[in-house]
Image (tube, rainbow, N blue to C red; front, top):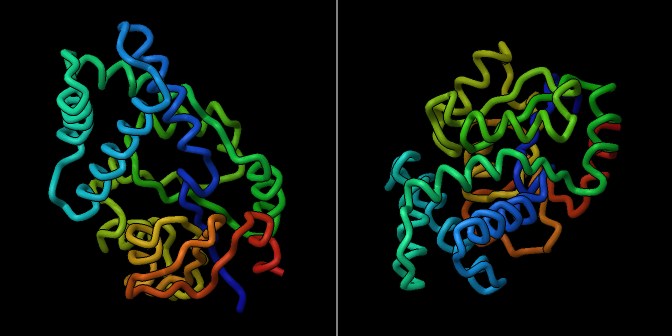
Length: 227
């Protein structure tokens, strides 16, 4: 099948978000004299992941998430910290971490010569845009769709509908969408009628009710799907 548009999720698909998150967390904690051990980061990361899942389910708002993740972390580790201040500093540090996976840039440069590419990402607007700029990928993407700016989080159908409106799509199956999250990317893409590709480098089992059209474990396989 020929496709009209190619969309990528950003974090954990093109970007090594865990590496960025870890560096931003460690730097923030170190600046304030808090525990910055590997164990402390792993605890924070789990809390943060859980918060984003709650956001996907519309159980929490993004402004609340940004502060609550640090308030929850502080409570779990019995540390006294100003969660709002720490959140602001962490977010600013994260915005400077545009860490791509090793093969991401080469893949983007290749596929962008074949088809119009855009990004569809859950995230905070200024953070994502700063990271995209730092990594040097912006010239290869027509649009940067970010949930905060669209006022809807994947898998909310509103996110996908607003993307389609901007792209002027008439046949949703002609959108090829790559993402790593079954609960956000694949679920949302399937419900929207897009052609979905699950990026699954860790070979996880899909226990959800949403089945992608394709599954890949390497970004370079994106090129094969377009050939």
